Image 1 (cartoon, rainbow, N blue to C red):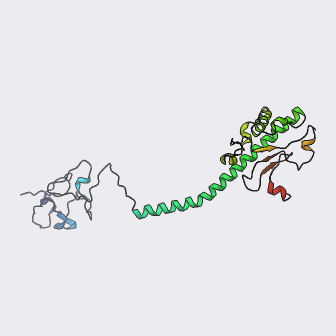
Image 2 (image 1 turned 90 degrees about the vertical axis):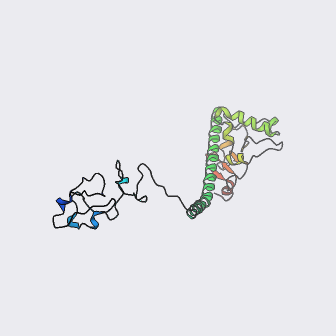
Length: 250
């Protein structure tokens, strides 16, 4: 009587033991789920079994196959197709990451403050240079320094509006009169109104050469020490220095 080998995937064709057991081994019925290699020697294994797995994967893990009769799939080794596993962070790992981010933030704050301070100073210097260009254009066009009327000298608001209006046709827009640092400080005049000019022009007479007679005389000076090193001053040649540097002979 012919017996059929059972227990491997259903794709393995049934084999007749009488064809393989040629050394006097009596036919034996293989139970469902039983590994025939337990009672067949390595030389007597069916030719259709390619290799022996140390931990055989259940047929349920193969696409398009189902477990054979009596075979219980190992749930720990069944791979779910189309799914991806993710590992969560432990509380200790989260705390370590938070501590590192906090340390980086503490180190970055001083550098950021220094960067913003230098950027604000660069904007202020650029404002002064643009105003210097506007005053130079006025000198070439009119022939002398702007002569402010005495009627506006006693009123802060009228004083600022007159200078802004006079120099605006030469490229000195109202924005150029504002220092970014002093603007954030909300400087106000005696009446409580916001300051419109953070750079004060020097008063010269109507002589054409008066503004350029002395190289060390300022054209405009900043209202306060907004960037460190004293108020910024711009000179007839267009150079900008801090008041502290000027007093030290720089």
